[in-house]
Image (cartoon, rainbow, N blue to C red; front, top):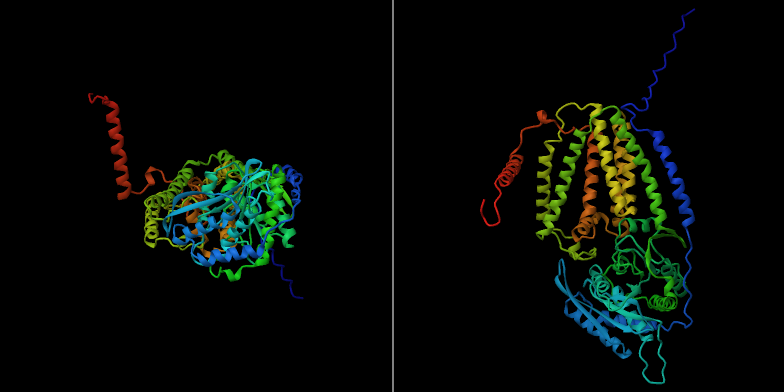
Length: 631
């Protein structure tokens, strides 16, 4: 009988790393337990959801003539198709608006100023407005921009809005005879024709800074004769929203007159608009100044294309319906404006709103688990007596390198290398919005590369790095990200939407030190989802495509994205770069004096200048010179 072959022994089971060891420094239980703090914010969020009601419709039926309005729009676009501010057609269009208002007995006032627009030079702009006095000096403003980019006739964008402005003013005209009655509103009405609206809302920004009367509500009419369903745009230049009652009233009046469901940004889109305030329409400056404003349009987040925008494509039925709805909206506001004043922050969820402060509490609650885990990681390093100073110096060098690139960008802007937009979001349709000087970009790249070469001498890996040193580098990187999160919380809590993904994803990089490289790469990419939200929002919602990163640079150059926000972003990038270097096995702590390489010519020059300055200051302190010139 043959001997039985012994069964093969099973492979030894891989032992799981001990919790709290160098391989598992993150306390997962503590991290998961910290999510319990979300229970209260979520409960508050649930009770903060309300359904705002619209203001009642006015008693008088609308008397808006859609056919006459279309004829006015076709006349303006046909006579003066290129209404770029400062051109002859622009001046003639201004005279056209005055003549159109003349039969109604409403005097037209004006405000003229100059602004520099890249690609067009210094332009002369002019706002025009007619005032229908009411029982109160508080004004309701109905506005439309008169200009266009010159790429098309501008029949829909925005001769349609300008023509509707004239037709709406007809209702409040002075009586032709003594026997005729005049419609006298409870509030003063201002019919505002802005200039520079197609160039970043320059006219609206100018008017809100120099209003002739106190403004309590604004209705912007922009491209209202397109074939698409009507849309409400409520994003502002700051993380604020117009009064919910105003928005709901506008939606109801539009639905009543058009029979269509009114479009607006979805829940996530509105949250992005609060986290990254940006709008290409003219309600933005008013909301930033605390004035409730809404834009009615048939376009999208980005105004419709100028090519093919001729009078033959105007939709008369849509123009008439939107005009009647606007007239009804003005009447509703005139009767019950006290319920629709002010600005706040909220996000629409179908026909309900979620309060902004409740969303802020949820975002803060999502930040707490990371802060708890990062603090525990710091305490873990302290208990093991792992030195953090070399890692902190390494992060300091990276931050200096990234901030050097930001300072170089703004220095190039100061000397005129970048397009100098007048602190407004540039219209992506303008030729200058996508054209950057190639030579200046290459020169900036050379300057940034030189700064990287200098900082690299202190960051290059010249020896094997221990597990303790890598953990110290990751801990310091987490602390840097925590500081960034707190700065974002102090400036705009909604912007935590972009910060939370890298915080919660990169927190687990220390656990993957001995894992597969693919897992570390996947976690790093998952953390980039936060910054990608901004790029994808610009690329998809504003139809910028692959030009979205360039447009972000234009927003920074124009000052729409503040230098402080750019600085915080660069610090976050430096902290992320340190974590990426550790994950890729290329990290090195800041070397001690004995391990540092010899100074290069640039470092030697900087050192000589600094030492000379210090010696001069010491001599001045030892031998002070009096103001009279004596010793």
